[in-house]
Length: 165
Image 1: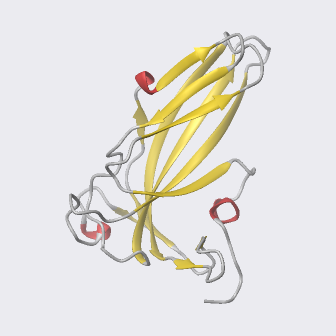
Image 2 (image 1 turned 180 degrees about the horizontal axis):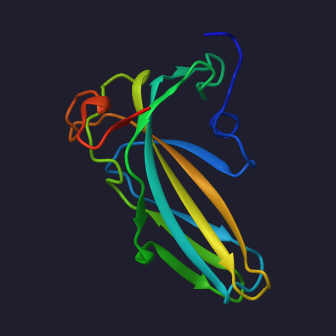
């Protein structure tokens, strides 16, 4: 490792709209978004894609994942997540619950947190249809997939549907 720390936001590039979590494939999680205003004209879209990085290191001081020496070696096809995973709690106040469902990645995982790591990236997009032109913004969740007893131990790179770079 080079001694530098590169988080997933910097690794992917783009705006600071990426949150990184470590999950088991069977984990579903609901997040509350608070837009702070009326969102009655908003539409939401959730999509997902799993990438695989060859190696993943960790910062010794914080335990945070460090992508400095990681290389994306391949990916799986992207998919849309159903609209039932968006629950507009209060359109006037701008609160929405977004549920990232379980099993968005269903392949093998090496029981080693540092080798051939699948990272399920979920994009939450919202479009404000009340303005012209319509504006779309997004937020991403990078879900580092971890082996659990219900997942077959194995290399994700050997899975059907894996597309090598």
